[in-house]
Image (cartoon, rainbow, N blue to C red; front, side, top):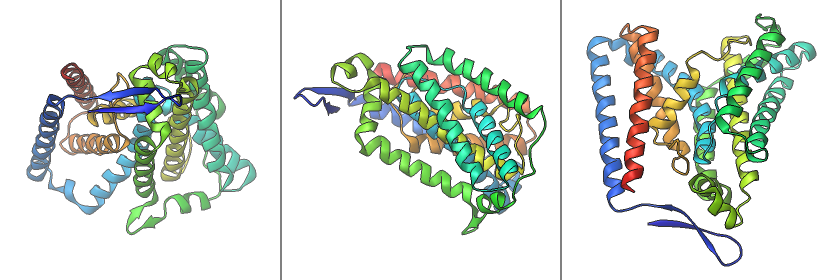
Length: 332
């Protein structure tokens, strides 16, 4: 089966292809993952039944919303053939700038606007460096992570910022049908991102660029603009997560994003079968991957597994799924 994109002049760009054997191989991986999760939940039922309490399940969804929105943003970049390591730093700095703006103006609605604008600017910088200056995505976003993270510490002086209008927290913590607003924003982000990726020309362009940027360029796909926009989306969604975290924690600081957050984001994407090689993946799969990662983290915590041991386990999961992704691509 193949998907084709018209190049506007009668030609067509083949953006994806699958063979008959590919779905069965992928199904084996999905079944193995389902069995792993089922075994983990059974273990939790026996060893730590408190995991299934309503409050803990809501907490899992809230944590999943943070990782999930970030993973959805990273999905656009990965499908386009790039990588964004600066998302946690973008989250922190945008949250700090938004909190400072609210503190200065005492206006709760200035903060979210400043946060989203800051994230979009940082993401656009990454996109322009990768797309127009042809710099390596890993190097660019690693440098951005260092610069933005350092700026977050410098601006705050390693202090927390909390003296802003409480209307901000009241709005973003308001529960709807018993669930915090962050959970509904996570669901909305996943649905909208899926619609953009699967139902729009832009989504097909992103896949085409991820598969083969040279062929996409020959088919008159605006490769540079598409790449730049994927990073802008990534930065904007990182800023949206900053909004939710500042509201949840009641303050903004340079440590707004945890040290393991980047690992969780990448884990969510690879578990959700978003290929690090580009061209393959879905925002909905990344969202499901975020829930799986959060369940694993919460379960390990409830079982008393140390923080460093959990990092080893998550790192092993990334290596395993990257290897499985390579096997799937070989069978294609």
